[in-house]
Image (tube, rainbow, N blue to C red; front, side, top):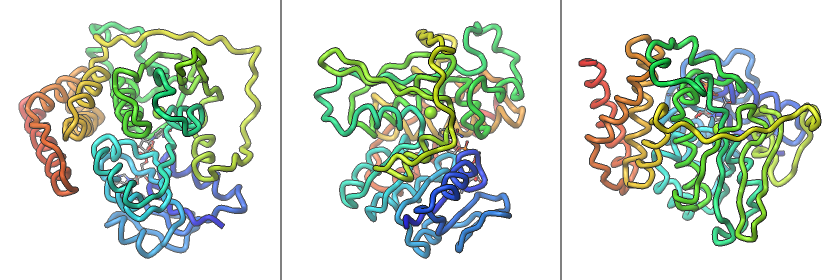
Length: 353
Ligand code: NAD
Ligand code: MG
């Protein structure tokens, strides 16, 4: 029996994870949490709404933590698992983006596994099969391009939260759906890939594949390129992370190859500046990725609340990055401090926006 602590159990990933756990005889929930919504109908011996997730994890003693919290709030659980060598199935990309160096140091001390749940990173993990970085020419992250792919900047001036939330290929929580519309999500994923696989930024590419069938690719030095294909359904990477190194059956249909056409396009970096801004924050290192994430979280919440326009999201993040000091985070307190300072700066930007 593998004991799973599911954090963010009421969310998009959380609900799909419950389906996977219930269908698999060797998986059981030992704990479940949510940020504020009630956990009605979630069958776990320990449950918690709000509060300190590390206290719940201490009591639950899980074999694997599935961190499906949204946002930087997931950092404590990520570090808890990595520090103790408890397997971490990570959907909460924001914690690894913001605290990548601290997370890798904690993992080195703890000696556990970090199993990506993000579909692109699960795909890369499977194509890489643990091969050393020198065999890899580059990682190619795919993205659908979101609901506004092909639009000009002028056409984005007045788009509404409702339009941004209408993702063409994935059904996800609101924050990541807006990030997919701005391409900030692909930017976060570039940084996530850098920390997960130890590949330098100049060897991490992004390409758009509008139907989200190709989940990512690895180009190897011998000229071979391996791709991971499948229908866009998060139950596959969730199941892979929870049952690794097994590949448990899922209810997905076989891929109908003769009905597919696979198109690839370059992303429009000028219309969607958050992808390049994230890459730049990653390359600068230190707490720049943390600042990128914090400002983006504030800006996305303000957009969803109708307080700022879609194009203001990138403006607010750009301003926050320009003001950030990017100092390294020696410990969690430094990181929390960098996050807090950038949020305050972005909130101030909202006040005058
Ligand atoms: P969601 O908004 O649907 O669910 C978020 C969950 O986190 C909810 O259970 C909520 O109660 C909980 N939560 C929110 N704030 C919290 C806090 N401060 N403390 C503790 N718990 C809190 O989000 P989602 O779409 O399921 O995404 C979860 C994570 O997975 C995000 O980091 C996202 O980027 C990542 N992810 C999601 C998908 C997807 O298909 N939904 C795909 C790839 C990666
Ligand atoms: Mg993804």
